[in-house]
Length: 433
Image: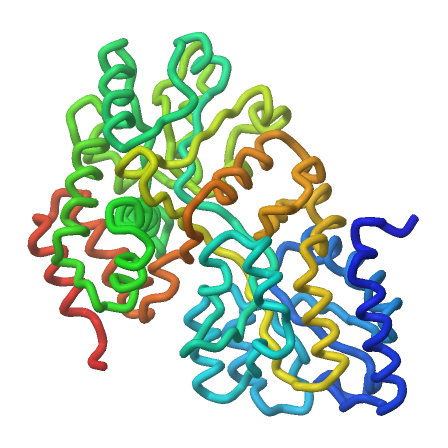
């Protein structure tokens, strides 16, 4: 049965298809696949792609075009090698805004300002999501799917029995909750940053969330762009809260010395230990449920609770940090423009949401389509935010975001060096402009 919620744009798109048929359209980057065939490359999880493929196929057929999806690996690097090539896709789903900016600087992608109805998108999308794909004032990347970080997870049955609050209004209240859990004879926090060659990245997530909460969206963006240094008041404030919550004696499982050697994927599992949690809160992204014990995953809604990391002040700016996939247009022709308009439809995720981890960046999305209450709670954190901010380390130069930021955090957390040295070393690692 045709999904009625996807039919709102069919009339407009069908009218566009008449123009396509009349002029024949330009040939896309998909080679000899036909004037009205649009190729999309993506690295999203297979279930997400399958859902998007099903929804877009329906609208594409009514618009006189065909959309062909292909799952590829290492899409960021792959697309760079395909710029201008005959076998380049018409559209690519890019998971990092920095790569979108790089593609735009190379004239490898086309602006979307005259392709999409930006006013309509601004009315439905989470604030900040359009900014993520904007380069020098022009929209180049459209966020199609998103994930959310800065989520505090807990064992729901144990939490309820203990009577702990499920809504935390400020960071001060989170500090109070930490002290309350410890006063009850429990260990408040689970924490681990070990990740093989990527050890340290979970600590960067903590700093990104804290800088966003203390500094707000604009300061966060300036920090990511190296306009605000690591050795600054806002980063030091973030570090002080990190230290207080996780380094204070009795606050984290195993203490400070265990954090660097505890794997991020299993760090939260002691929350679900038989009998009583060994630690009570774990801050991680929406993906972490896949790492929880099988018995926990078998019924997430019953076993797991969550709340978003709170703002610095009640009622103040409350951005959320996350990630997602930005659709960019590598070929400019009418068929590709129509496909981009289909991807911009607020209901394009209707088929993906029930079968996958897909979260829509549109606040108007039908929450009932998400597969469980846990996913709805994750989405609500983003929808209630004042701005959506992309993962900062992913936007920094590689030698910083996936280099010194990871390694220097590890050295500091493990006690190998002090905070002053850590911040100074990261600042010194930025490449010359």
